[in-house]
Length: 113
Length: 113
Image 1 (cartoon, rainbow over the protein chains, first blue to last red):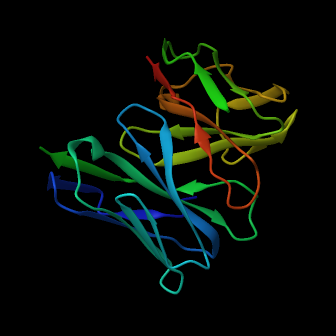
Image 2: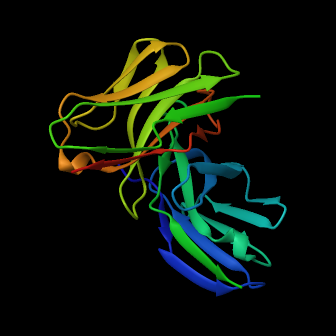
């Protein structure tokens, strides 16, 4: 079953601009993760935020989590053409099978040079 | 360091033929193992997960099966492929603990013709 839903489905920006992607989920969670997928490749983990955290940074990435709204956002600052990829949020259901992640459908980001 | 290998990378198979995709993990012991499928332009669907040798859980009813004959080997199989089995198959591993990151292989493209 689908847990996370990313928004927008596709995003096209110019290099240097910021990119914001959102994720909504349905059930209580222990943590939320963001992954990146280059076209035709496997997914790569970017960042994890726990349910008791509100904001987390990693390099040019900033993730926020609002458990009251069951939503998260991923902000990529000063985007580069190399950031072009699909971005997925993933959650593990609180009380569910340990370690299993449920992924959203992803946001396809295109950064134009 | 841990690595995950998945093969073959691409496969074109006729309808009704069998399938075998193999995945192995190195550098860790007793990992949780996963098979995901990604249809074109869609999110990831969890097909199977395994917490140990010969312990397989199926998330969705389907034409596929999985086996784990060794601790770090995970195999996805089908006796007779359907056109709808076409897609991008991803093997992944994780520690199995709540909050764990999942690490993906490079994926296998399956086209059923």
